[in-house]
Length: 85
Image (cartoon, rainbow, N blue to C red; front, side):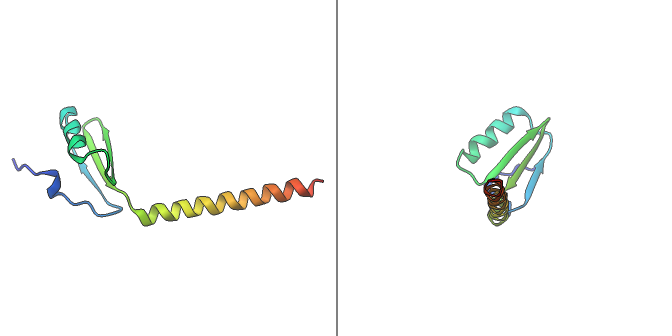
């Protein structure tokens, strides 16, 4: 069996790592080692652990798209409100 330290594993932005057969104690130890101020998202489902590195450029695009959609919706709502009068 090979043992790796978390600091030896590098996850590139927008990528993820899947670890299988992780017991709850290992999951808690991984969370402790990574700390609360991290850029990665951690998910555990029945012993399968996913570590996903956030992709800042992708998230910025999503936020920009939501902002444009909201702006368009808001402008339409204001136009309809004033056109009814």
